[in-house]
Length: 439
Image (cartoon, rainbow, N blue to C red; front, side, top):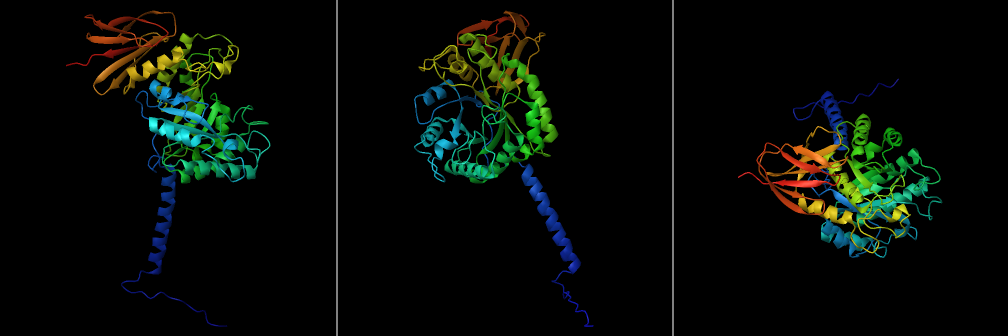
């Protein structure tokens, strides 16, 4: 037998022993594993993404639109105080020839630029199918997922550096937008394929998914089990309801409990209200007056702010038509001819009156139907209040001073009083108190 050849590493003062080398390799490997874990848990902001809006009004207020290009709508949107728009970036509109993406003729270049010039942040919904790759309004094939991911990557590269929120699909949990049948598995496969492509192409953006019709906890749990929360930065829901906006509070609590069960360790998943509004023809087929719609709009934004929802997007910017018996024609803040509705005036007053203020606490008025919130802006204080019931007087715990009472459409009254608390009439329309700063 040939003798076994033995190789040795010469040991010198400058040459570590084999055991030391093994130790260093093990340490390096462990460090690498930890690094990957940490990177996976680091917030997108820490990795260079533009952060979500803070709590100050109206930084997180947005509106859904249905146009591209540069119509005069954008200026009116900015004047109302909206800081974000949400718009479909339709795959089949951009890619009409395989591998060719036309963002200019489709109007997305000019829309993106117009929003940037007006200080409006963009949430683009990467959505809907393309008959070049898929036969239904869904993506269920590997070829379709690959093509959609390439389209998403092209869009993210095109608008990189602008802090865009990139949302994957719209309401995939209902048959209207994912045919022939919604599928948790197919939707999650799509998000998994798309998310890293977007993130690499646009480090300033954030990946948004969910975009569910309503807050369907069973559907969302299915997505979470499939790994959705590992791939995304932000979870979006559309909390439509026929009931008043205040009823969403318990739904958010349930949703956050579900997220806590499935989110990766140390990863925070913000929830945004990506689409929510009230038509003048409500879901239960009751009629809402323009006044009621305006009340709901303001209360929706304030309740979302109270619930620490960083982005709240109202549906819809403009009435989609003129048929009073068609629900989709009556969600707008302005009419089809661009004349302002009560909702437009109300959001403009809310955004300007409480600009820079954020909700610091809910004030207990001793009645579950009465809502009042204390807001602060530096050393300045304000109160927003309303009731769900009939108008009646409420007692606000404010020390004697001078306040300016502002109605939902901007009417002002200056009030001075010397009693311990302030007694005012609450209505279903929110009112605002600007408290005179102490000397």
